[in-house]
Image (tube, rainbow, N blue to C red; front, side, top):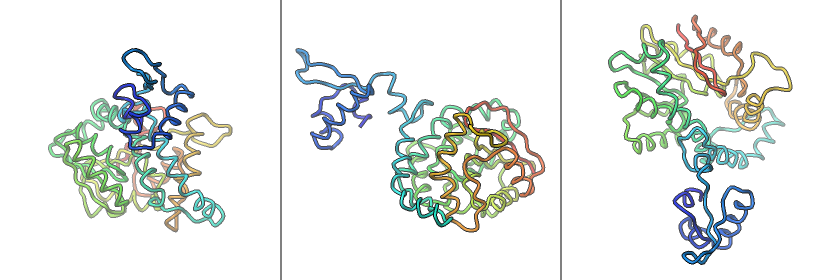
Amino acid sequence: MYAVIADGPVTVEDLAREAGIDRRYAREWLEQQAAASILEVIEPDEGYPDVRFALPAAHRAVLVDPEHPSYMAGFGRALAGIGGVLPQLEHAYRTGQGVPYADYGEEFRTGQGGMNRPLFATELASWFRDVPALADLVSRPRARIADIGAGEGWSSIAMAQALPDASILSLDSDEASAVTAWENAGAAGVDIEVHVADAAELASLGPFHLVTVFEALHDMSRPVEVMASVRESLASSGAVLLMDERVADRFEGPTDEVERLMYGWSVLHCLPASRAEQPSAALGTVLRRPAVEALVRQAGFRDLEVLPIENAFFRFYLLRP
């Protein structure tokens, strides 16, 4: 509904018609949003005899611009998806079982994609331009890049836009996510190859000059097996760009705000989703640097470098066999 209001001030009738909702609900929602100072009220005047509601310019980026760094609407959709599985979460906590990712539904899937999309849209190109090790990997002609755990494809799309000479394979085990990734790539006008497969099968699709794992390692039930397959998929002198949470190296409570956020997602989604497949490493969202190092070394990587990419939420690792 914010998208309707973003085009200009609306009356109750306008919103009901354009959003396809009941007039009474439209009025209550508009008044609630104005009461919360999210919308502004424009009183009637000679040109407009009815009260109108407007979205302030400062709120547009947060609510309606999906590639702006301040965009927050994805969080709301993700929380709606979590609400739909609360009985399953209770059962999982009592039994030690998990909640399959697919059960969180479209709201969570789209919300999760929306949360990270601005990062890829606004910052990814600079990683490959400004970090020499990454620039070298993707500078070779027709570099092959595999993006695993790519979800709805925003990271793959951003790489295709930033690296037009590269060949991008976008891989996810969730079929609904892969279908949406293919649709999103078409809408963006980029050519990426979309696969529905377990990341542990990556070795059969290689070789790749670069494999990216963006905020997916902590969700894996079998992280060592997956990363071993990733290592086997690499071309000679290939490498892995791994992005996961920027949290402290060890737990000390109370934590900072970033770590509090990560624990919030972990108890409601990441840990239960990773335990849907058994046996599970049950990593949880708060994947600390020593744990990352231990996992990738078990998978056969000998060289791990923390890259100088500044980000409040994520730490970036470059892995080489």
